[in-house]
Image 1 (cartoon, rainbow, N blue to C red):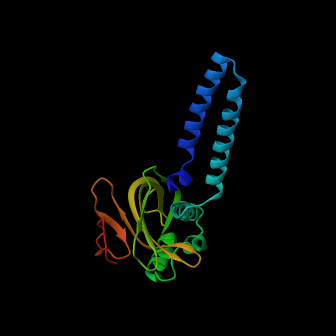
Image 2 (cartoon, rainbow, N blue to C red):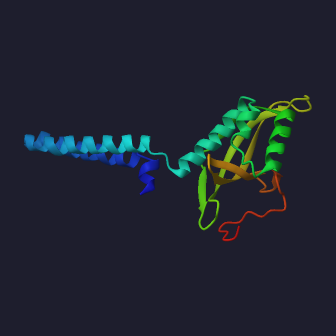
Image 3 (cartoon, rainbow, N blue to C red):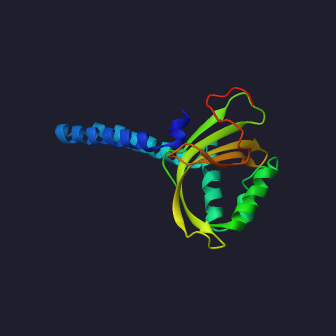
Length: 196
């Protein structure tokens, strides 16, 4: 049922199709009794659409965190990036500060293949997000020019008192599947994983 709260468009499409059928029936029969179902369907679809906008699922919270990290990196806002990283992951916090001092990022284009997997039976709750992105940037010393770099990201989040926070990451070349940068390169990421 959470799919309904994450993507309202199937409900909207079904409602529009039902409305078209009812309008066709109204046109063919001329019976005003079809107005009531038309109004009911419109109200139901509008209510479900409003509910989807109001309710934020855990998956949407993680997606918002990912886009928040990307926006903070593009704005060169180190504090904004650190706000999304778990206090329990000092190596990632240090790595983020170090990388943001060395590199500049002009743009991060997150692709549509963003997937979030939740870990059952973990305390604190954990989730893993995987997606491709094109990062456009370079180094501040001018050793190489700004250029687009396609990357495959695997991010692990843990649920803390103040929301979902980044606790581990891997960045890979999508063409070769090799790890380019990670906080612990020896760590293996294989789904499904039942221990942690």
